[in-house]
Image (cartoon, rainbow, N blue to C red; front, side, top):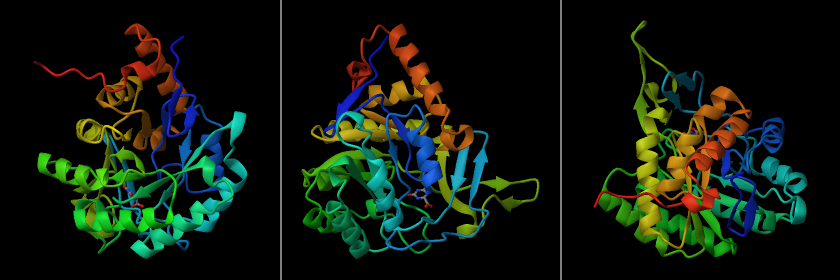
Length: 316
Ligand SMILES: O=C1NC(=O)NC(C(=O)O)N1
């Protein structure tokens, strides 16, 4: 059978699949359901320094082609997730390294949480994904869209977090922006991975049976996920793969089946996150997508999925 194992960031994963931060990962029960699933690893809900209720409901809607959300960073707070990894992250043979997402309400909060994570007893078995791209906190712009802000955040976090870590990026839509963002990110060698993409921010879904927006926060503006975003996700994976050759790229966006995951590998992703489809199908999605990916790679004659990473061909 095709070897699906991936060894990156100092860890070996049984397969490249994991959840997208925010989906099925806010509580111990949800996180344990991912741990028990066929996923290669998992990531915790982006946490803030203190517990947060987030935005008023309705704040999430599944759609035929994806989803819209304006959750507003509801989470149990940093200590809750730090406690979870204390008794779940394992090193050595039983290794199932856990990704830990942080999205402070201020730069200082993010730096403070990163400093605590650096000192965590299981710190070596935790991979920090710094979320610079939440589009849903009213009044807070996406840090990833302000290059100066992104540089300041990375300076603050690298000053207190000595290990390699990663950044969850928003989607970019202009070659100049790919170049500018890559220039900032390449200035930080300890930014070892980039997760492309977060939801496509501030979409508007209308229910025209009642002429009303689908979700309550921000007059219905929310992050778009699912099939809608696969081409944008693949472009961002590939753009940063070519511009940041020393960094690992984690793909996120539009993965419903094994072939979508394969496309992310071709574009340059080493790991692949599943969000909207995981919300719709539950953790069983990972076994299905894993088996579909394995069958697709076998059909294409690959011995291992790592052989497909970045193998996208252009038309000469
Ligand atoms: O980074 C985020 N991306 C999203 O699409 N939604 C969540 C949120 O609103 O909490 N955060």
